[in-house]
Image (cartoon, one colour):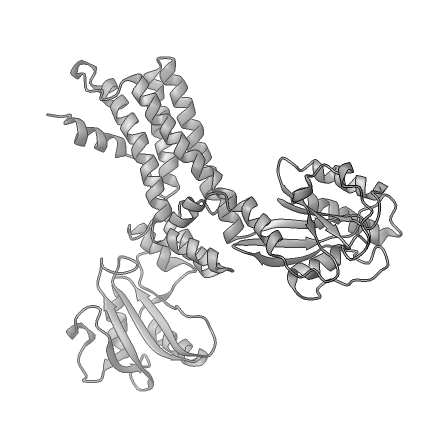
Length: 461
């Protein structure tokens, strides 16, 4: 780890009322003292910690007053990074903040790398890795629900659930280790059946957490969604209807849309990355439309939410069946929402020829403006656990998911080894599982199991 003193502008570039510069490291106070003069000419060290000091911000040589501002000291370890930290608030001009940063760098600080303050906070035990990821998600949040979920991660809600899972594993693993290391002491606190029950409870909690991944991603980064159907079925009209603005060109000529048009859309508490596509048919009018159809099929392959459109004013046609066949291939991996278009025209389509229940359809057309039923369907499809969402026990990225899955697989392997009487092998497998679960929060197991054994069984007496 780099132990140099770092500095950076912590507020966005541009003009604003106030800007904030942050310094962290062993020489943070010394660097700040070189360019900041309290109004009464004292040293900044003469003031209490976390006390805002008003004064002048100077150039490195002290010859020029750059600005007036406020300085606050946060001595280690009671700071964001766990190191000595100084925050300087000044006027929010782009040029003046750059000048003050330059003075700090000339005074001995080095420019912080992206995310380095949060990285130091993690390395110094001030936050878990899931909390650090929560900060990144909070900064990138596109909806209120995403901001609230990220805030819960920052406050350690997900971390607490990971710790609970780790504790269940420790309860079983430490008992197993005690038995293996000191068989003559009869220190095993759990029978084999009790260990297996504890590990099954752990897996149940982990499965619930794993099931939350799609919900977390739907809220934070968005679900890939696609509108598909035959040419001139009303895809672009529906796309514009969902967005509330004319983004896609709409004409009565089939094949108007030649490419995939993408746009993020908030659907209640869920974010979807919506794609309008070219109409799918067997024979394209030209090579451009053919490419558009190929891209439509590619977008369908990666979609997790599919709006399949049918023209209720026409009977089911060959192109409808082609689209339907491709969509139904995704029924196990995507949410499929059927939509009936052109509701202002007389209904001709026989719904019994389609594999959907009558109540599943969303009906749209001229004069239909209420999207509430459709938004409700989308929310119900992806908000699967209100309690977990309320409490913040949700995975939000692929890294967390992959590590959790690895830990679960190792626990299942360890359980099978216990059933087969291979306790020595099982102890190593469960230790690896614990390391995997702790990796979600960026921690390593190391001596954790032995610490648990010593504290609970008084080994070494």
